[in-house]
Length: 325
Image 1: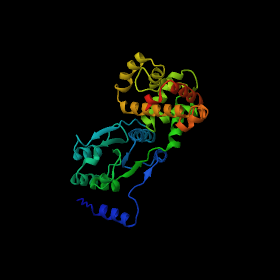
Image 2: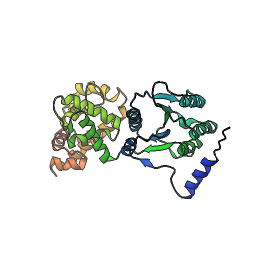
Image 3: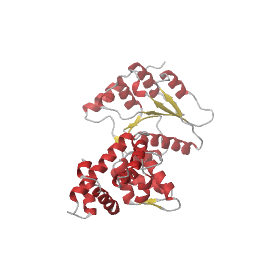
Image 4: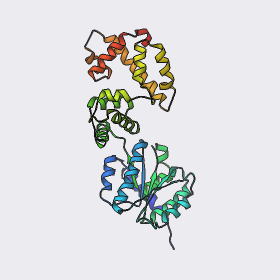
């Protein structure tokens, strides 16, 4: 007969706290990816972090690494503990696959489990099925969530991977790899423009690289002008077209673009934020006009491409200071 107690979990976590050691540490995505090349997989992983795209990327890479190591196809099975009981999950994890040397279970909703459900998980952790790899997935976890008993059970019964968001240098390298994977290189100005426009949201950045690559066609380099041409908040038009219409006082065209860019799709908030940023930059160009070259003013305003700075300076001349305010 098997007896199990949470006492070991409690004493281990208490000793860590007494020693001043953290229960877990932030992990770089590249470190997680490199760990998979050793082909020594854990039975259970707990993967979470602030960037959903990075979490999805890590789950995909784990599945690929398992396939490479097993030399057979693995079809991940997704379970949501909002809809599936813990007992059903345990039965699935303990089942043997007839068609593959390993099975991968992707489990969502684990942080909503109550303590008695967590104890059932802990029992499975003590004697997991060696043919099953379980990946528990969560998003960004705040301090209160980390105080839950289920978090402690997961921390002590799984390989914990808290993915740190990529820093600026890593995002630049990631963008360069995304372009290289498609057979292109990217100008530094094009990369800087994408970061200014989209921030470090990897999902959006990947979409922009894909659009720019399609626009570049047979060319081997993605330039700033290409990125500007396709970066937008709707399928057909870009925010630059709206700005050009405003500067040219083309009211009809500006009104046609308002609905599409600002009130269609899921990026309305981003569109308004970026539009506000452009107006502030126009104001800086207007107030500093004649005091320094456009390129110098551009660097102060966050516009690092000389031709873009010159264009914005010309646009700013056509709009009154009062209108910009």
